[in-house]
Length: 94
Image (cartoon, rainbow, N blue to C red; front, side, top):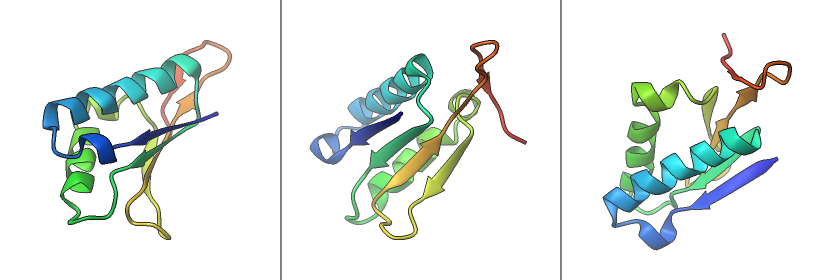
């Protein structure tokens, strides 16, 4: 399952961006989604940097496996998750 979050509509509302990012991560964990696509858009790159800073916070970083920057579209990021099926817990890669 893949979830998608497009930040174009809230690009200038910092608090709402953080809330939307946390919401999509929580939804991915709840639904055991393997991938979340985040679209900060191309623009100046400031929103993408804000998203990456958010994802790099210790309490957020422990919730996902890895972040991938799209090589074909630099206005898009992918957050990968691993879920341990046997225990229902989210797993961390090495």
